[in-house]
Length: 419
Image (tube, rainbow, N blue to C red):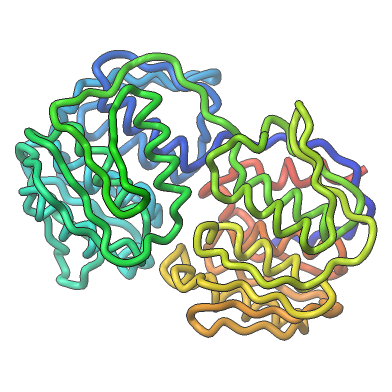
């Protein structure tokens, strides 16, 4: 447990590590490339290390130094692995389930108890349509999954995208290895669209062509390969948001270095939310600054495409005047925990009126009181509520070490907010 010491009128410059989403994708694309890749500023965390370990178990040569990750791509010539354990890494599970389709033979991918409750049936169905035999071993539509890898066929795949965009990203990443063209057609509305943009950006950087019609159709010519080379991972915007949120709650200003508005990371749109709430956002050459001097005001916002920062905004909203409504976040239910319920429950513990109806998260601002915050083993719950302690005395974060999942040195960086 860690107790947060209040600190007002911040004046800080912070540095966050590489993007978790980019890191997963660049590791996989590099592993599937034809030749050596050097990856710098990759995020080293529990989640991304599990992805590396999974790739190693499928025969990819990977060397690690303090400055870079060296990946020797083998052009998609992978070997089956008896079992790949991915704890509660949803990104790793979904992306590597698809990658295992390229490995001749049987691979089982599993995780912890929470992972065994997280849906993957839409991805299984998509892989089946590509000629790959995949099944949920317990018949629940959740991990553990068994993948019988074989030659990847092309053709038309119909895929739902209303639970997670990672199913689409997973299929996109392996489609260049199909014998013929792959055409993926989305049914219904795709959630978390910017993460698909991220996947496509990584594919393009490594020389793979994808043709698209918005977020409805994606056509990938078969017989392509990823290009080896030197790659840099930009800083993680989801992690930057905690520090911008710190300025919103505690007042003063915080600059996160190395981020600019050209990033494809969808969570960058939290800056628009903070502006609407009354903060100033300053885009400078060295990074982006958020500053607050007056009062925060509640807002209404659709966060379907930026669910990872929804808990952060909800905690900020607890300090705003009026009510904040965070709409279209039903997919919070299938994250590392049910984040909608977790956030609303812990805010109520702090004396704040908060409610999650399964689709929308509503928070009425007030004067939060100190409380012991249950993190539900979820890194984003721990980090989101840490910023509340900058304003409210007596905020204690239980199981604070859960941040290793995405931001191992979070508490060290957090301390840099103090004068």
